[in-house]
Length: 523
Image 1 (cartoon, rainbow, N blue to C red):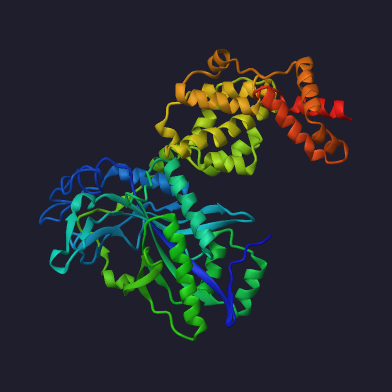
Image 2 (cartoon, rainbow, N blue to C red):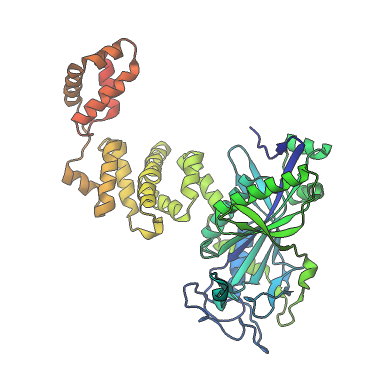
C-alpha cells in the first residue's frame, strides 16, 4: 500500500508542499555569547548582562560547548559540517530583541544537506535538511490583556542570548502525517544525544512551517506521485525541487504543541485549496495559529532575506571546525534511536511495534537494556523469549503505571533486576500472567523484589496436573449447560469454563494446562 498525499476536490488535484523550521534551545549552562546563566525558572531579568542586553561597546564571545552540541546534532542528522561558518547580523526591531539585531548565520551556515529518515505505516522516506545554523534566542514578551487602560506588555530578557539551533528542512514534506512524524523523530534524536530537553511548553523546541499548495494537473508531477519514487539522496531531490516551488507559500507561527501543529497545517492546506479552487490568489504572508478558534490568521506580510539586511558580524571571527574535533564528537555520539530499534529487532527478536514503543523514549530503551543485562541465557531462543516477556511487562504494566501517575521513567527508582526476575518467573511457570500483574502492582508500591512478594503472599502458579484435574472436573459438574454448548459445537464456550477454573484457583492455575485438560476430558 502506497501513501496518498493528494487533496482532491471538484476542480482539481492538489499537493501540499511543506517545509519546517525548528528552533532548538541547546542544553548549555551559559548563553551563546556571554557567561550569563541559562535558567528558564529564574525570576525575570535576573540572568542578564551588558552583552546579552546589547549595551554599547560590548564584545560577544562564542560558547564552545554550544558549538560542540551543534557538531553532535549535525552528525546525528547526517549533515555536512562546514569547516568555516560565518556569523551574521540579522536586523529587525522587536521589543524583546534589545540590540535590534540577532546574531545568526546566513550565507555560510554551520551545516548543510542532511536528512532524517521517517517511518510511517506503509513506507519510509528521507526528509532532507537544507541547513543547520547557530544563533541566539530573543527575550520573551508577556502580554496582560484587560480593559484598554489596563492592557500592557512586560519583557523578560533572561532568554535573550540563549544558544539556539535552527534546523530547516527542504520543502519535501507532502502531508500533515509526514510533518508530524518528522518532528517526533527529530525531537527523539535530539533527546537521545542530549543536546536539548526539547520541552515544547518551555519553548525549547519550537516549530514554524512554510506551506504552499500546487496543482497536480501537470503530467510530470501527476506521474511522479502515482509512481511514488521519492528521492533517496540530495542530488535527486534537487532535480525534483523546481517542480514543487510554483505555489505561493505562507508561514505559520504560534504552534506550541504537536496537536496544534497538526491542526494548523490541516487548516492552512484546506484554506489554500479552497482559494485556488475558487480561482483566487494565495497571499504570501506570515499567519498565526489561533488555537481557540482553530483557524490561521494573518499577522504580517512575509519577509524575505533582503528585508533583514544581513551582513557579517564584525565582532566575531569566522567559526572554524577542525576534522579532529568532528572525529572526537563522532566517537562520543551515543546509539541513535533508529539504530537501537534495529538492534532490538535483530538481537532480541522484538516486533517492529514493540521496538518502536521502547525507543520512543530514551529512558525507556535504556531501562530495557538494563533489564536484559541482568540475566544469563543458554541460547538465542532463550534470550528472545526473555526479551519478549520483559518488553511486555515494560510496555503494559510499567507504562500503564507511569501514564496513570503522569510520570516518566526518569522520575521513578525501580531496579531493573526486578523486571528480569518477574519475567523469568513467568517463563518458568511460577507465575501466570494474572499473577504477574498482581506481583507487579505490589512491587510498584512496596519496592520489594518479586521473589519476596511471591513468598509472602503465596502467589505461586498451580502446575500440578492432578490438582488441576480436580478443579476441572468440579467446574464441569457445576456448569452442565456450558458443557452442553461446547459439545454441540460452540467451542468458544470453553473460555467460560476456564474462567470459572481460574476463579476457583484465585488466578493461580496455568491457563494453558487448563485448556488442555478441559479439551481432554470433554472430548
